[in-house]
Length: 102
Image 1 (cartoon, one colour):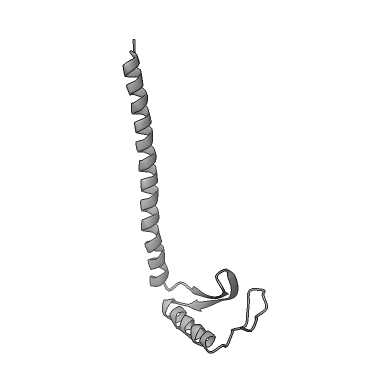
Image 2 (image 1 turned 45 degrees about the vertical axis):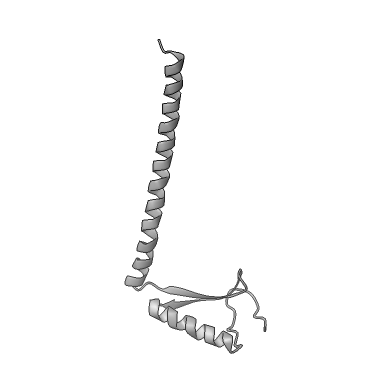
C-alpha cells in the first residue's frame, strides 16, 4: 500500500505538473500574440491596405474618421490634419457629433 509520505509526494508532483502545464500554455499563448502583432502590421504595410486616420476631442471623444489610403498617404493626411488643428481649423465631424469651436 501507499504510505502517507509517498501520498503527499504524489499530490505535490500532481500540483507541480499542473502548474507547469498552465505556465506552458500561457507562455505559448503570449509568444503567439507577440509573433502575430508584428506580422499583422507588416501585412498591412506591404500589401497596401487602407489605413484610417482619426481626430479626437480629448482622449475618448471621436470627432472624425476617414480612410486615407496606404501607409505614406495616411502619414501625409495626419500631418495635414495636425497642421490645420494647430491653425485652429477644426475639420467637420463625421461621427455623429457636432463640431465645437475651441
